[in-house]
Image (cartoon, rainbow, N blue to C red):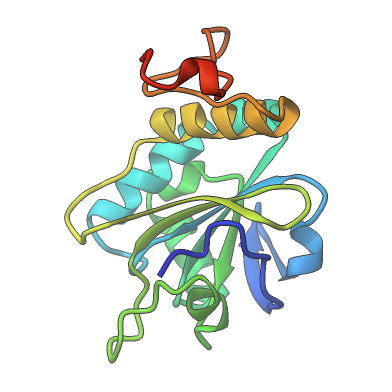
Length: 187
């Protein structure tokens, strides 16, 4: 069931970021673009490759006004231990949300029933707290930060340009479309 266009649900959880533990709630997310990047578990295999890819591109996300929140059902203590022991995870400067209660994971509908683990889900939330994009992949399929950046640029563009849409493979600066009666059957 799609949650596109719905509002971010309330949550409060503990997190790890840049050597500190902190409390994060939905109120901390509002006011800027955000990515919620769910993954099954710390100390695994595909997950660190995805998180390292995000870490390597984090400065670009920040320049676009986008904050990243990685989320697993591990604790913030586990996130710190992983950050301290893995060269890939040690690169992370974004917030790593611990979700042992499963509230955040269930809010986004990516909890694996009976397993207590999150699916590989990516959600982009606009500054008003509306979910604008979602992608869920199977266990063995890793995600790509560059493709996520492209999709966020498109979402930000259409938010700033009502009445326009971004076609397939759209890149920043390329032509967009303005859906109208005159355009029907012309593409």
